[in-house]
Length: 591
Image (cartoon, rainbow, N blue to C red; front, side):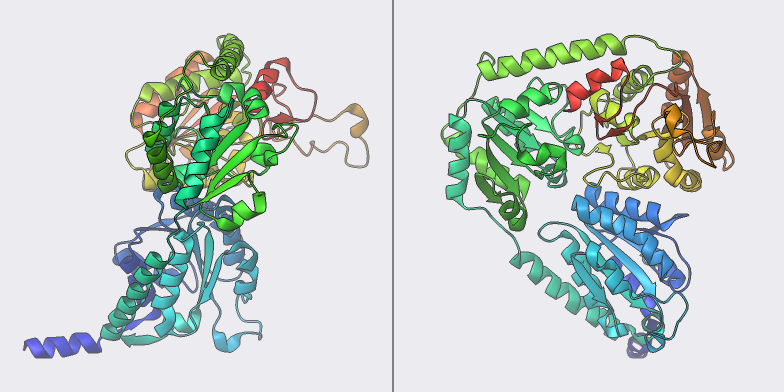
């Protein structure tokens, strides 16, 4: 009887959908995001049956942003599933976001039957070519037997070396092909065996001599600075950074999503003296951050022309591109372990009375004092600072584990970077390296899924919220602990900002390109799906809404009415029009 059962199992046939699901599960994938339809609905259902939680969205863009952020937060590939053609194209938004931010993600799209390519099949598209500019790896399973190998190669590639986006194509005919279950298991095992070999073969470790040179540069510097970014956060390097900073007394500056690796309140934090720190430092150790536009390309006039950069990056190509004084190739955590070990052999510390520390400390205190003086005022109708202070205090009162903060928008994100305080690693998600708007709700959902023990708080401009607002239904459907706060000032930067001479032509009576419907009831949108909505316009109303929604940990939208003239056009904190005086302080903290 036992032999008969064994023979029956070995002859059981499974299709490509089931094999794809089993391959994902065998790799250790536990979550997938996407929008289903022909030809991938069965794949999604089989994945759920295999123990993979599928989070279904309304729009592939938001699902893609969720997959990219999930990859960052967990260190495992975020998975986006889309249908063919337009579904794949919509998914490229998330894939490109992952690629630019260097987060591990795999976009899996169904595609048309291979026999019908070139004949105008339903949603036909050369998806390999479409995804090519945004992928570090492209794969296509041309036969059911190739599925496990293709999956493991894509998943490996997403996380090996510099993380990034990968694409995998699953033709309709391949998903419908069948093989025996025993052969399927054998193919998965073979793919897993090769995967382990590749993981072991591609580890990179920097040379000990280069570590010695780096430590010597820091030891002999007069004005050293440690800069770290989301690459260090992704590498889980917070403990090593803490040890380095506190053993040497070197001040530090995080990039926006590096905030929280060390608390913003740390005595050696230089964020409130950013211009001085980067403008005067003579040696800068840059860990897991690129010398791109966010760091002014490491060039004058923001940086000294004589500064010596020590660049720590997992990508040798990145170091060759930036041409720093010294490059250390490797995982940020492992490289910092080597640096700390080298320092331990011959310790040094700047000391609190060091002129460099005194200068940064004084500048930071002065800037913070000026900012706090403005924050202390209750301005109604709301400017940006008054509600931001109330939100900051409410988030801090939550304690640990700290909420994950998601932020997007123009002025809203700019002001939030300076005002909102991060105390724990990987608790800030914003527009990132690519300055992507529309990430908000996708990031919220990813954070709630990846960090179920944390509250998620989104602080959004009304324009940023609008990109993905329909996903509040997804929040309610999965009952995720997300509170979305919308700064509603009636448009992009705050409504109609045109000069009189610009209001001309046959369509001059149309709303301005920056204008939305005044007083839009964003809070009612979530109520349509059974969530909780709040409309607030005073400090007491906002405090009450935050207290109630944070305690409930249920899906909520807080619609915060802002003075439409309180903001200004900006690019990542650099305001490019005449600006209200209260925002001048923000510039001093962000530049």
